[in-house]
Amino acid sequence: MASRHFGDEDELRIQALKSRTVPPEFKSIPQTTGINKVKGYKRVPAMGEVKPRIGMPIRADGELAAILWLIDDDTVSQAELDDCLHTIHQVETIFERRLVSNLSAELQLEESLAGLLSDTYSDRRAAEEDLSDLGHFAACVGFTALVMRFDRESRGTIEDHEYRLLLRATKRALTPIPAQDRIFGRVNDFFVIVLGFRGAVLTEILQELADRLVKEADVLTPGAEARLHVGAGGRVTALTHVSDSVEQGILSLRAASATGVTTRLWDDPGVDLLLADLLPASLPPSRVPPVLRTIDDSVSPEVLQTVLAYLDHGGNIAKTSEDLFLHRTTAYYRLAKFEKATNLDLGDGRARLMVHLWLLSLPFLRRTEP
Image (cartoon, rainbow, N blue to C red; front, side, top):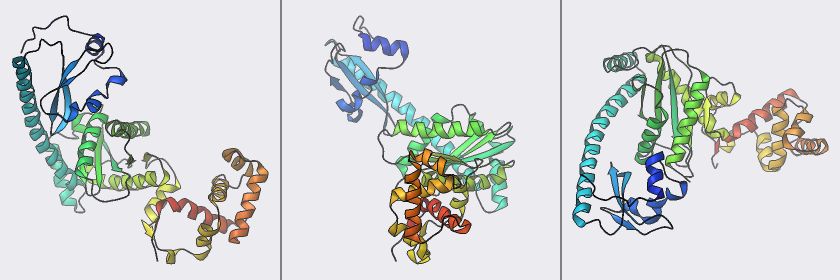
């Protein structure tokens, strides 16, 4: 298809051609004008110095993939518009064929991933051989897993729209990793990535990848309440043992969600990983010792915050005051208030241990009614 239109450019068109991007204030045009939802084309009036346009959405798998923009100078004929729509239809057909091919390959890799996580060694060994036949992980000497899930109230299997979003975010974030050194897919309640490394598995690289996954998910879901959390497992030297790394990644994911961070690495030390492994998901009141129930019922949040900071700093009142921007007298007052309300002596080692573990455990637990 050739265009016979010349001289109808504006500054937005020139900038888009030169830099392959547009100013931020114009990126919302598909949503504000409704072009992202139309079939066929839609005319957009002029906006300041930006000339009127005709927008034609291009979709892949039912989702907006691109928009073909024509500057509307009242000389574009219906025949030319029909030519554009025909070309878009051909492009979408190519997208569909590639999607079917890619989906088949992804499903095959998901089956191999599920095999790697089997409880049976023979299944794991068979999955390893299948991946080897496909050319995956040929030169890798170490493996680790990244486990992801959106933090939402209703737990359970990853929903289809979340799955598609995670696929897109993963493909974008893992661009630097060779395609043959990674597999990913939905496994039960999680989205799992297995990475192969041809040398040492550096903590800095894992952290960078985890951060990039969260960033890509944020870009694809602007303003969403549910945020992506990523847990990274430790390194294993055999693909048949990658299930260990996945389990560690799940615990890291739980720790990240409980402590309010988006990413957590198994190889970074912290008591939160131990609590993630030991604590149940919920705890009925009957299993909470009375003195700990007293903490919940009788102590204010600011006093609990001071006690936790005091215990985190090993009983150092100076660091506690500095951390919370409190006068030392205020910090001492709150600690004394806690001891009076609970009848616990924070100078007693075992009492301090019990209180500290309980306060650190609270974010991991859902309380259930008796």
